[in-house]
Image (cartoon, rainbow over all chains, first blue to last red; front, side, top):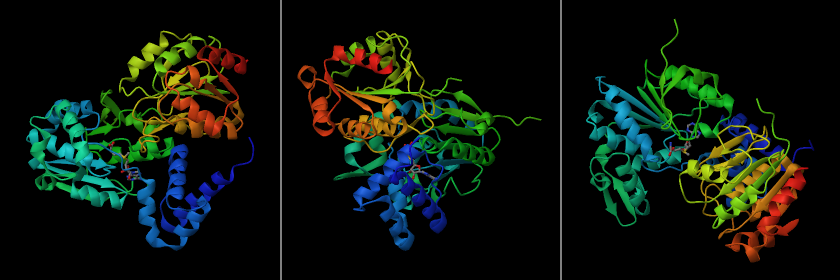
Length: 277
Length: 190
Ligand SMILES: C[S@@+](CC[C@H](N)C(=O)[O-])C[C@H]1O[C@@H](n2cnc3c(N)ncnc32)[C@H](O)[C@@H]1O
């Protein structure tokens, strides 16, 4: 192979600088999409090279939050892939109903689209009152928006259709107020949701959940980091707890995947296997 | 386990793409050593139907490009809808839900640019019929890395914008009719 391109060398140094100076480790993000995001960020913020961006973020701490926000991908939808939410409602909720108290962890919550979806379904299943939901992300800018529960009204129609396809009992508009360009979700949906910063790369086990929803986050991680995060999920989950991943995600490339069994492969819903011995 | 594919052919099309793929995939030889990767914007969520449809006309196995799966020589991998598709340095696929590029996801540019960096001169790229600008920058990246660029003649394309933009932005090694594309690829692989 030929010698590395300047961009690739600069990317390596950028990753190293973020790690040394700020403790953010992106070395185990899948490289092709990460590189494209860094390059878009460089262009959007008027830097000439990745090297210039590195210099800036080394010296200017205030630049870190917007940078992390720019490298994170808070792209989501309410009830994204409705069949998954339908499967949670029909196949997982009935099993969760036997517990007097429930913890649910949604990791990588973006702007909160999925956590509010989950809250609505729990409400309709009569499980909301006994549930504590933790919605986490490593992007503080996204977390602040998630907390607000405000979405563009141009998306309301697609979200409503998803809600119906997910088996929603009423109409999505029962849960929001339309205001000009935006819809604002009912404040009461938030009463049992805690939004918190948790970095899956660096932070430890969390909240003993009965269900973890972590969709379209592992696709950004190398096999090694996927294995680490799946281990974290395994060690956090209650006995017999459930894990729901994104529609294209797979456990096939991480040894820790062996600790889970599929209960609905199409919906990517897994259950923690009983410990051997 | 299958060995990593030594070379790859990437293809992109949009409006009119299904009919175009039928001709091009239909003309590929059964012994093609290269992996083939296709992005076709259909607007449909149903990748299984698309794969089934294409398989009918193609002598090579056709399958969805699976997250972290290897590119396999002699196999046609089709990008799933709703995700960008990338080729990583270890010649495996990865997916993302990053924002749309050229108003589409999967984007042809994203696939082409990542594949160019991995396969360099062992890559052939094909831009066919389509009604948007996607693929042009990708094709430029392919050429910059020494890969081969083939563009469908805009004059005969069902939608001329995509091949015409690709030609304007990137140029091409070959501009030809749909019927001429598969023979070029078969020969390039030989
Ligand atoms: C594409 S979104 C997924 C949103 C939602 N789960 C869905 O599937 O629609 C990925 C999210 O993962 C978050 N993320 C990426 N790396 C992370 C990390 N190391 N720790 C926590 N969250 C992370 C990003 O900030 C982003 O909000």
